[in-house]
Length: 313
Image (tube, rainbow, N blue to C red):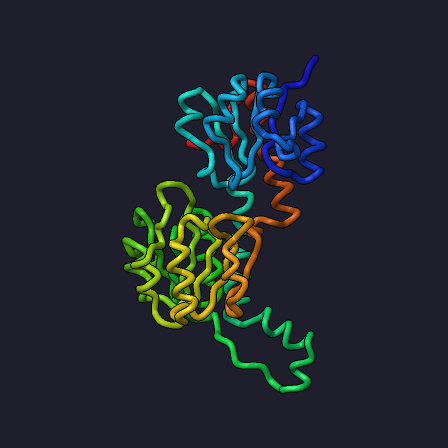
């Protein structure tokens, strides 16, 4: 019996490819030197698409694979998937929520601690012998007890808030709706910005949040604020963020996401007070294995005629 054709849009770990190959005939789009030619050749054999949050699937890809009836996303964010196009073509879309929540929240706090406590600078200070030559390094900034504002109090935002509670922090948040939580609510990032020491972004990506952290929000930040983003680069007005870093309004930043990944604006590498991460917030072995297993479970449920474990509404 022939195995269904599966279009694999982006690179996946070997353990996922091995598991998928047992159930599907894999067509690795990311290895194709000419994507259009590859899709023209293999598209008719495709019955499902496995993609990644930052890569997505557009209407042209769906049209090139007319037999595909499910798009399984390896990640939570589906902003790069054309959901209206999928709906119009009767294509189900799934993602991998929950399994990466805690790791992303860990990374948010890792970036916060790295920026506030100048950990990369301290590491270099020791490695280069500067400590021995010049004596103690400059003083850093504490994290515990500070005022933290979280943009987006979804699964990841709540996990960040739980960690903030452990640091004795004063917690507030902004979002589209007020949640049943004991934290101060603000109707917009701009309204929250001047009232916090740490500005943390965990909002979902997509057209609805593009530019959500806009010029008004960034310019409203209290001088000396720390800025952390584990959301999507599209959520932030990046030009204004750069300007705020240049002016010193933002004292330090920890960034896991950017516009134009992975070819990000090189100016970020020139800021000594910015800690950079290559969109790696969910990048642990444990979480990536769980993501792959859930993606496969969605695909198997689809082909088995069973309810999808995590359909995208």
